[in-house]
Length: 299
Image 1 (cartoon, rainbow, N blue to C red):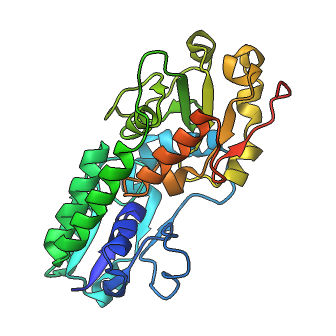
Image 2 (cartoon, rainbow, N blue to C red):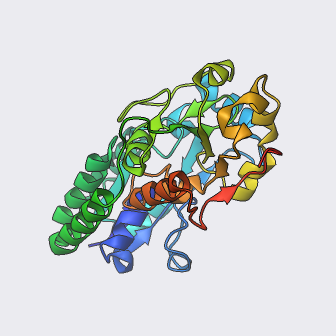
């Protein structure tokens, strides 16, 4: 079976199922497993320039001319040349990847005998169901069962959220402020915290930074979608200059952190379990080295 992944999370799942050798095409954003994808051609590109700020990216993606797959170019000629049996894509997020509709149109246009599957996970259970669905199509059900068992055991070992749980604001986008949605509130709950602004499965929407002062989070975690930790640090001034920032309990107590959003929080793949463990370590006072502390001048 020849597989093309048009979603980085799908590439993660394909790799975890031991199917990297069947992957014949990927997105320009696929970066995991490190070193294993170098010889696999990218069938997408983006129209967005590199090094834009979060505000500039928001402006570029909010207009009618930049919704969904218009942000991305799909190399239809290469798609036809690669002759995939299975294409994995999504329709969950307008600005995350080439849409299911766009891919279906391309497959119809070039008359490929290809199955196109849209992945729509909104929760951790949904992510594991996605793993099972891909496994059923590729004959890797045994490996999928192992992935699910490992994920469920590790999540069960986490403290969970109870009375007096610390209030956690996960920042999925800086400018405008967007809290972590979909599975991120579950990650926070498994880790022993209480998610602010959104509950499990909820889609994230922009909020005014002024709401943060009223929420008074005990912990703030920055993991913007698509940003490396280094790029996130470059933009932390967006938060620091907001009125009331210095008075937040999280800032006063030195509980502000930066994590790798794409690796452990933004993508609907099994590595969200690692993300929950990273948050649990932060909340327990024994930070994981994959979380980077932000000096607030109060710690």
